[in-house]
Every structure is written in C-alpha cells, then in structure tokens.
Length: 173
Image (cartoon, rainbow, N blue to C red):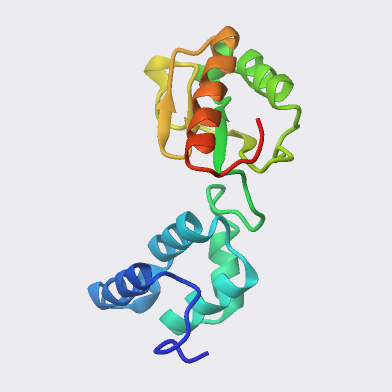
C-alpha cells in the first residue's frame, strides 16, 4: 500500500498518525493511540486497519494483533453506534451492576457482546471504568452514567436512540 495516495482513514486522521509517529523516539510507541483513533473512526480493527497501522509504524501485522488483543477496549468486530459498557467490578457489583446489566440485555434484546439488529447499540460487561465512588456506572462510547438503577435504563437508551434518529443513523426505532 502506498500511504501517500491510499489510506483507509480520513485525511485528518492520516495527518494525525503522521504527527504521532514523529512524536516518539520509536514509531512503535504510537501503536496504542493509533489503534484507538482508528477504532473511533472505522468502528473496529478490521484486517485492513491492522495492515495499514502496521505499515505506518514499520512492524508486522502479527505484532499489531499481539498488542491489540491484550487490551479489552480494542475490538476486532463491529460494535453498535453506541457501545454500552457496564462495569461489573467489585464496587459496581456490590451496588447492583448485574441488575443494571440484565436490564440492558432485556431492553436491547441482546446478550453479552451483542449488537442490536439496527446496529445502534452493542453491549458488553467490562472491568473497572474508574467511577467506583458513583457505582454502579456505565460508559456509552465516551459518556459516563453513574449511580444507576435498572429503572433508569430505558431512559438512557431512549436518549441515545433519539440521537441516532436525529443523525439519520437508524431507519426505524
């Protein structure tokens, strides 16, 4: 792939990658930020994303995969437009996280690591998201919601579904 003429990424992200690799003494040090930015733009780490990132920093695709598989926040399959991450670590668990998680499954009609048929939501159970004082907590993309109760789940989902409809990202709801 000639990165000068062909890239999977927007011109802005390609330029950001170019700047990132110049920031570090070793290009490889830019790997995690590049993977996170790529996932934000593409939605997941496809084979093509892995290949281009590897080429940009001069390592093998296997090396990229070896690093990426270590981090639970990086994914190799598409997620929904809104990825709901329910923390079930000790603080959240003790304050009802599993009840919240079950309510999300019921409301969305999907199981763990599932994606709704319309592609608007995905759901996963995660370890600590750093909101222990406000447990139970969830993260939807980069938005935090804390001190949750199962009865708040429908309202949270309705808010995101409304955003998706307003952006024209879903045909029906």
